[in-house]
Amino acid sequence: MSSGVEIRESLPEDVALIEALYPSAFPDEDLLPLVRELLKEGPAVLSLVAIADEALAGHVVFTTCSVAGSPDEVALLGPLAVAPARQKQGIGSAIVRAGLQQVQSAGASQVYVLGDPAYYSRFGFAPDENVTSPYPLPEEWRGAWQSLSLSGDKSPLQGALSVPEPWRKPALWGP
Ligand SMILES: CC(C)(COP(=O)(O)OP(=O)(O)OC[C@H]1O[C@@H](n2cnc3c(N)ncnc32)[C@H](O)[C@@H]1OP(=O)(O)O)[C@@H](O)C(=O)NCCC(=O)NCCS
Image 1 (tube, rainbow, N blue to C red):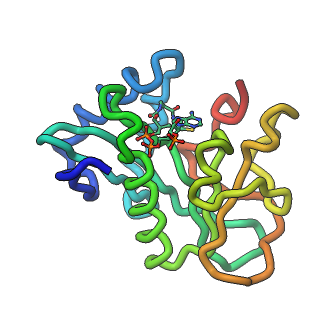
Image 2 (cartoon, rainbow, N blue to C red):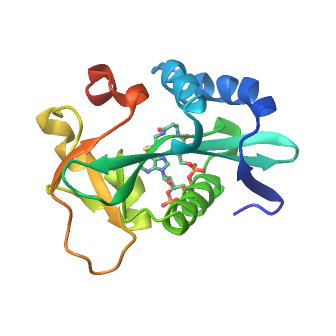
């Protein structure tokens, strides 16, 4: 990763910069309503920023969730965005790894993500067929629903992922 990148929890004064980051990283997708709601969600949400050269270079959210019928605390990773000028410098990987460490320390046993396996496999994520996404996914997205165990060899959870309100929008779970 490029030197001099600071990763820390986002502050209220970062919100305007975070809101500017998403349209530049995702020109074809409007994630701002989701991001805004997540930032208001309180302790269930871990929001990390990467700062490089005193500018916002990346942002990621981890949301605490549960699996129906299980006492385990789990997390949902996303959204994740790196500023276009800062991509492919290891910032996305660094901010994801920092978040994984934090949610593991906070007690999460498993992390789920809906994203490109070509990217998320580098962290150890693999397709998950034991826990289902909150809304049915189109067939071509099935392999994009992945999980990573943070609790060693524990037997896999089974059930449906239960998410807080900002994630309860079917449009977030389909093309
Ligand atoms: C995806 C994203 C977060 C990665 O951040 P980053 O800081 O560029 O990632 P890193 O530098 O840690 O890793 C770069 C590697 O990821 C790969 N990569 C980047 N985006 C990818 C994608 N959508 N799918 C698969 N691989 C991807 C790069 O090709 C590079 O591969 P290499 O290590 O083999 O050279 C960033 O490119 C981004 O914000 N993209 C636009 C938004 C987006 O697509 N977000 C969803 C994430 S699936």
